[in-house]
Amino acid sequence: MGWRAVRIFSSNLLGKHQQKNMPTYQWNDDHQALELVPGTFNYRSKWACFDCRKSFTRVRPTTEPDKVLCPDCKEKAVDMGHLFEAPPKRDVRSWKVAEVLGKNQLKYRTAGNVAFLNYMITGNGKCSPEEVARNIKIFLKIR
Ligand SMILES: [Zn+2]
Image (cartoon, rainbow, N blue to C red; front, side):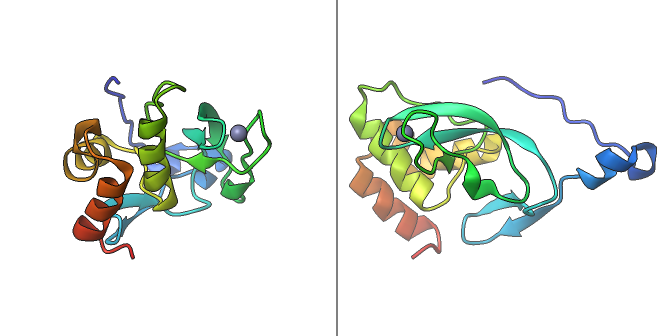
């Protein structure tokens, strides 16, 4: 994982297409994270299929983000955020943990998300899927 430069433009310097594609964020108290307002920005994200234990990169569609399907089994894939690092296919336990995060819509979108999920939720990969589900209940308001 590396640092990525973020450029902030004054919106009147941008063309019509770019103005439409301006990211707008809002704070989600349940997830303790800044989240993109749906429909404001196209971005590349990593998607996961928990049945195939497969991860792939796609541009997130702004209008229909649920329409991304697994290229192998054609079932609905889950957006895990562009900083998601997929475990190896044989690592069933880590994939179960990722599935718990995905079901609770917790994503690896920012360095802050990664730190929070690693230290508070997944115990740096040491927690079992059950412990992860318990941590989510303890530290977040998701029920
Ligand atoms: Zn699949």
